[in-house]
Length: 388
Ligand SMILES: Cc1ncc(COP(=O)(O)O)c(C=O)c1O
Image (cartoon, rainbow, N blue to C red):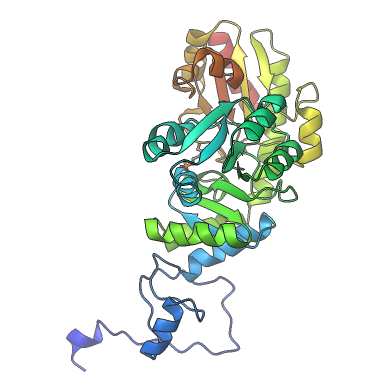
């Protein structure tokens, strides 16, 4: 073999059958071959296991998918390039022209923009209600044949808690699928409810480091098979390197999520006692109006705390800029604390009625709490409140 050939066909070191790596290798790899073309064809037809091309499946990505499916108590998971990607592809996979979707004013801005701007162009209709309006939800489902209900709990950005038993039962009664964006609650919560599909932004809690983006859809049976098939056609596979960072990050998921939730409760309690602050929303606070429902549905209350400054939006800007430990930016769930000031808060596209439902006020501020020392966080919040 000439050297020019040798460098393109490097030797494969033998791995003894009884000698196991503790970590699954990162298959940073696009292509696989079988010894026979018939086996390649059988694999492509779905008649045998294996891998052929990483846009369709990859063992490192599959390891992450199996891990997440298990945590969420479902059979299967499909991952992709971002949380928004997961929402978009799920909506595309499950709807067609003429279908109707129920969604909520309390939710992530891009989700409703996908419905109202993107899918509307393809003839998918949508109706918005408040997640608290049980009579309205029942009325929409009874009055309009509905393909799916997409919702969040706790909701972004004001951490309202959706009544999962009510929404899933109402949707089931009227033949609609339920899609729960479970990003705020994390991978370990809500699995016992009758939700058809869970969506996650993996960008948040999978590594906690804010270093990789990804999304996941998790569910069972035929619905999930359909989602997987359509995702592959759209071609936005998570790359194996990101998947391996997420598998590594997941080892500390529970420690991070619980430490961040404990810090979030400490911050919420501290804010609730401050005269400059009103309207602290955190479902872990005993006085929060969703606390009883959250206690029934959740074991950990999450890392996002939202509140208003009595002095309004401009004071919110001064407060955010004065903070040293909280970065003024998007995203949540990372081990360092973050703030979304009023000027950067979503919901600007909502009508006055929808905005009232959303409970986003002009001065609302969203914090994502990290794992810093809580005393340092409180001291930083205090000096910034005094400056604001
Ligand atoms: C509830 C929720 N869903 C989905 C997303 C989108 O995730 P990504 O940023 O990974 O696209 C976010 C991002 O903030 C979110 O908060």
